[in-house]
Length: 154
Image (tube, rainbow, N blue to C red; front, side, top):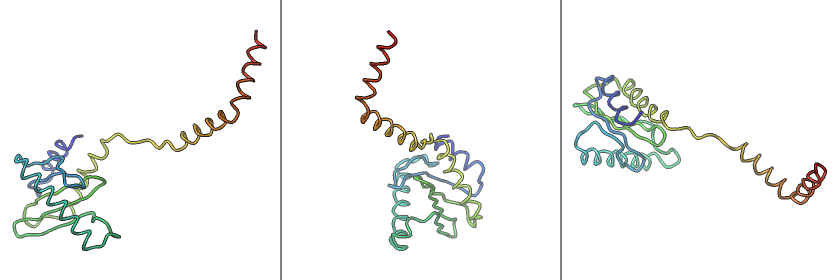
């Protein structure tokens, strides 16, 4: 699923989310429900800066928060971090914050699940290294053994 589809699905199922945008840790916009791209890019950059400020306040040992809510009388600003992506959403007044956070996190997880998974190749690399080591150390023996075997078959 691409980011545009994920945001369309999010705004369709959640009546309390008025607009949303997805961005990366550097504040670069991935996708937004806003049609005004410069405004969406500015919001993404500002949201990334806000998250960076929370790290300054909370201390670097705590890292970036998982979620942030700023409540206003007109609605709330919600920020959620999931993996390498972040999502910013503006809600209607008095949202059910727990539900909104759940929906935002689910939206980002859909994007993460659609990425191809990297396979752990630790054992394969270890076996290849062992075989290469054995081949390198016994290369003279194995080539002479192959030569003897070839001579015997002829």
